[in-house]
Structures are given as C-alpha cells and as structure tokens.
Image 1 (cartoon, rainbow over the protein chains, first blue to last red):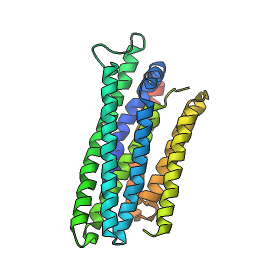
Image 2: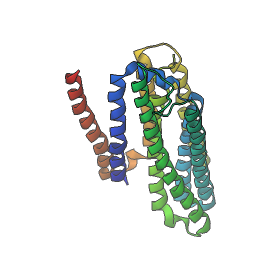
Image 3: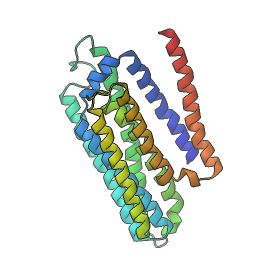
Image 4: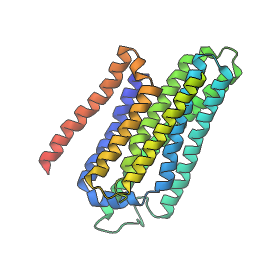
Length: 189
Length: 90
C-alpha cells in the first residue's frame, strides 16, 4: 500500500510542479484568479475532510479491537463525509461555471491577466477534479467496508482491507491539505 | 476505542481545525512573503499530524517507511532539478 501511495505522490507531484512553474511565470494573474475561488466552500470542505480522517482513524482502531458495530458506524460516517465533500464541490463547480471561471469562451478575466488566470483555473479544475475522482473511489472502498463490516460476524477478517482503505483515505486527505492553500489562499489580504 | 483513545482523537481533531482557522485568519493579514511561509508551514503541520497519528508511519515497517520516503525523495529530485533548469532559462 505504501508503494502505491508513493506512486500517487509522484502522480499528484507533477501537477503541483506544473502549478509551481505557472505561478512563478504569472504571479499577478495567479493572485487575482485565486481571489475568485470560493473561500467559504473551500474551507468548509477542508474541515469536512479533516474530520473524515479522524473518523476513519477511529474506525480502523475500532476494527483492531473488534468493536464491529462501532467500526461499521465510523466507516459509514467517513464515507458520508466524503459524499458531503463531493456535494459541496459540485455546488462550487456550478458557481465557478456561472461566474465564467472555466477557461475558454467567455472568461471572467481580460488581457493581460487572461492567459495566466486561464492557466490557474485549468490547474484548479484538473487538480480538484483528479482529487475528486480519488475521493469518489475512497467513498466506494470505505462505504463497501462499512457494509461488509456491519454484515460479517467476524469483522477482524476485513482488518487488512480496512487498514489499506484507511491509508488511501488519509492520503487523499493529505493531497487536499496541500491543494487548499495553493488554490484558495494565494492572495487574500 | 477506550475513552482515552477517543479523547486523543478529539484533541487531534481540535488541533487540525485550529490550524485550519489559523491559516485562514493569517491569509487575510497583509504579510507578503510570510503569508506563503505560514500557509505552507501550516499545511506541513497538518500533514504531519495525519502521517504520524492517523497513518502511523512511525510504527510501520522499515520497508513501508522506505517506500513512503522514496516517494517524497523522487519528487524532490524531479522538482529540484527541473527548477534549476527553469531558473537558468529566465
């Protein structure tokens, strides 16, 4: 599982590197574009994901000490928080679209900031989109683990699966922890 | 799942949310370069909490720690070498 996570670090790493180069090249456009992201929903989603990591950690701990019902409940809460994150992100994408923040066509920024701002929002959509796909997979894994744990009499059988799903979930949280300041907090003052 | 463990996780949750509040609050202060340092520093602190206490990297096998470290090391090498190139072009 850790080898898989290391490969994921490189996968997201190149996106962060593309972001770094683009930000060094267009600092003013990145500041202006970042101010147009939805700070309220972004911060809410960060809080949701951080909370979900706590419930995930408690769920893994519960299954380790064979508290089957508690484990199933905590895993269900974790998957539910993941769904809540995706729902908030969906609302956010809709608002971004209505504010013409999707690159191409009628875009919210005019020259000279336009090309840099388009690059920012292209990266914003790609990075949050790839992250959302990862989170959706996490919801399926953790939700499935919750159902299996609730149904099985011997929850300890799923320990390895639940531990791996937990590591994956925490990794997806880690990616968001770095996405959040890069996308939402570039220049708020 | 002892009360002690639940309390421990509640404290970790409070620490993560406090760090989030701190990074949002300081981002509204006009601190220039310090904003960037604070935002990244707080992100690294949150990541450290997740890695150490939730993913239990300290208690994993040496092989797992090596795999995790290698992921970060390769990324640093790629970014470092590419940035050296970028710096010389501009």
